[in-house]
Length: 116
Length: 110
Image (cartoon, rainbow over all chains, first blue to last red; front, side, top):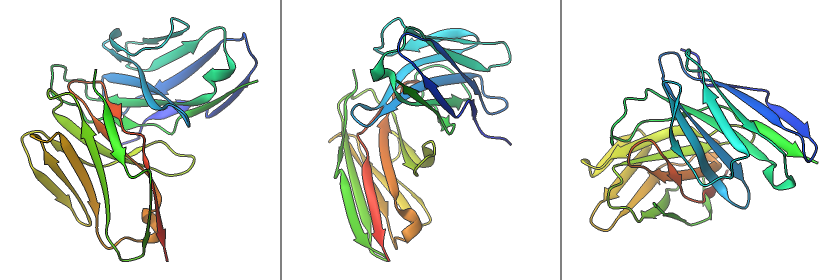
């Protein structure tokens, strides 16, 4: 079974621009979560989507948004890029059974975004 | 919200020795504790996980222990090999949101 795929793998943007990142989950997985990884802040939760609905959201400004399609693929968008948005953006997929049971999440390779 | 602390931040061992990484969490409702290994240029890879109804779990050279009363859990790697060198992250979750520790850079010297 193929793993989580993310495109593109690398991106260079300038301040003020916007960017869209894509994630395809493991086949059969219905939940997609996004995380930002930086040397200073570590791994931080952005948001989670399940059945095309945002189920959970972290403490990030409204410039960070996402969506999920009917085939479970997800995109995240960052508008008005700032230098501090430079990071590795990771997508993780899980079965998405819901409820309070902790769900095993499998990560993709990430998209490395550099904002100049 | 959940807060996860991880120690040590760096760990250097000789090949064949054991390595132990410890984490504490704050939310007593957390019920799932995965460990991830991240190699340079790659995403985190799940290596072992434990749920709150279990005290210990082992998979070959890797084991995890959980003490719910004290709110801490640990990763144990025995007979370390150079390919175990990587950054290791612990995490805790109740539901679908993972809160990660700050990571441990493990170096296994041949």
